[in-house]
Amino acid sequence: MAHVVLIPGFCRRTVGAICTQAASWRSTASTLRHLTLTSIMKSKRKTDHLERTASVLRREVVAAAKVCEIAHESPSVKSLRLLVPDKDFSFKAGQWVDFFIPGVSVVGGFSICSSPQLLEQERIIELAVKYTDHPPAVWVHNKCTLDSEVALRVGGEFFFDPRPTDAPRNLVLIAGGVGINPLLSILRHSADLHRDQADKGSSYEIGTIKLFYSAKNTSELLFKKNILDLVNEFPEKITCSLHVTKQMTQISAELQPYVTEGRITEKEIRDHISAETLFYICGPPAMTDFFSKQLETSHIPKEHICFEKWW
Image (cartoon, rainbow, N blue to C red; front, side, top):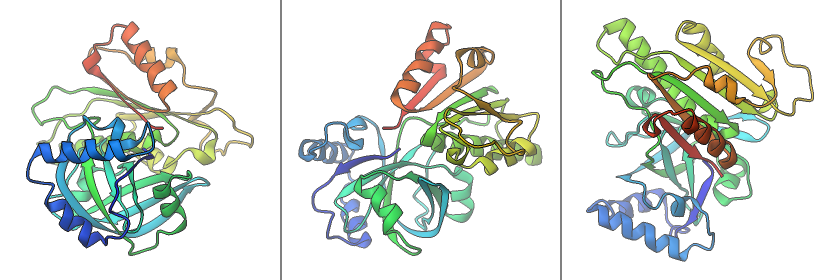
């Protein structure tokens, strides 16, 4: 998610000052709602992150984080690994963070692409940010360095967080472009659950997972090695179908078995419909609208269709 919002007053504060100020927001949910509504009224953008998520519950914790790794995931996307020492900071697979940058008055909204277990074990989260002209994305691509400090707050109602006693569910994940980020978090979390179940027998029993992922070309298919590693690790549990819509070069031999030229089709999705399947969709608005409506017309219960739009 590359949504942004202007919150006056943050441009001159350090991360420590942001976190100190944030502590005063923790008192009540109404305080958070007031902050949200005030910021919306002062924002010059009509469809920014905070406005679109004004009614979405956020965690009260605002945690300091330090950039510990930066990588190029594609020609247009950079990934960040951030160390978050605060043990009160946690998230569910699929959620996003408000991204506060010292010296930048615009606050980013980026989906987490790592699993909750990575945070629990190593206090690390991962983000992947596509380049745009919005200040948080510009900062990530042009100014962010190792040891840069930011602050994070978790929010979002798009997540997969089963309890150990829940009935097994199959998952169909449908991603477009950088909409892969929250779905990769869900995919990684599902793999962790399967490992825990195999090792300890005490975790949630996951069903099968099918990932449909579309991008302009193979260079813009993010995290493809990570995805294929999971497919190879769990061949009976995880499968993927990668789609490219404007491929201009030859597809590598490694990717050819998984790549289809052209968009994800209705028929491909229909072939995976069952009463035990949950559908998670994240991508451009037109894509999420199309597939969510198609699933509804196929009589999938609305509570089995989860979607989030990136803008």
